[in-house]
Image (tube, rainbow, N blue to C red; front, top):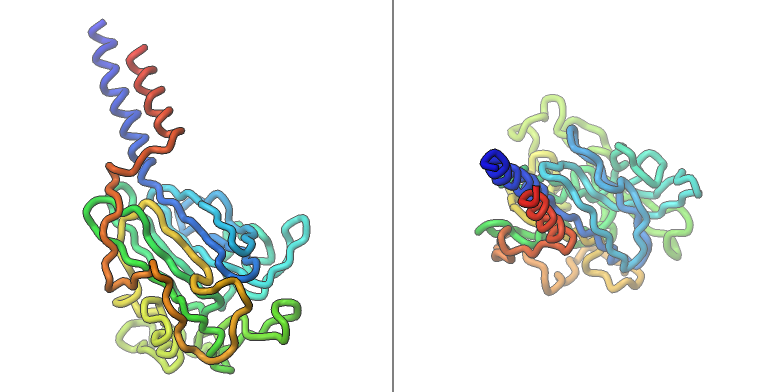
Length: 309
């Protein structure tokens, strides 16, 4: 009997520890607020498993939640103007990932607005950003929710429609069927448009001393000051947090009508939006986040099974 008793407590602790470790997974809530269908794609970094889906259709107004694992790193973006057959083969006007609905390890073809994140394992912090280093195709807002511990998290993104004022030499013009009269569906980076080492921060410019903001990256930065505009734009573009959920909203300012024409002026920010220099106070600590019903049942079953042994 004493032997059984000595086994119960360590076993119970192992079960609880395993459960608590898994509970630090983050949820990506992806919302399509655009007035048209988009096809989000996901790409895992080296050593990270793929998310539950690597590419999918998301109609206007729809929302999907993807659960990650602790320590996950990767990218999330949206494709536009896609057509796929019943086998998932096709193409997209922007953000294409190998001509398939499921990206399956293929990255986004530029120009594409990117959300990039590395989740901290255990109590380690998350590092995240929105990047226009590979160009731009859609407005994008990222808001952390449910902060662990006593920290604060920052919203970031590029909520201005850069396609409206994209310089002609950087424009990607749509094919047919995207919008009446045609229009700009993407804005290339200067690196993609011109290919020079200076714009690409490569060769002799592959360090923060020699690679400085260009005329084109400055245009991007002025319109979207919290997003990466070129490769070494770290100081104002990378953010640190520990959150239970990240809300990823494409076209956060649209009312699902057709996009207006005209040059850049930034649209009004949504009422709930806070830029990174405005601290978002702690919402919930890890100890106050309620367990879902299935998780509660798991813990109860674990306790009963251990002490019944």
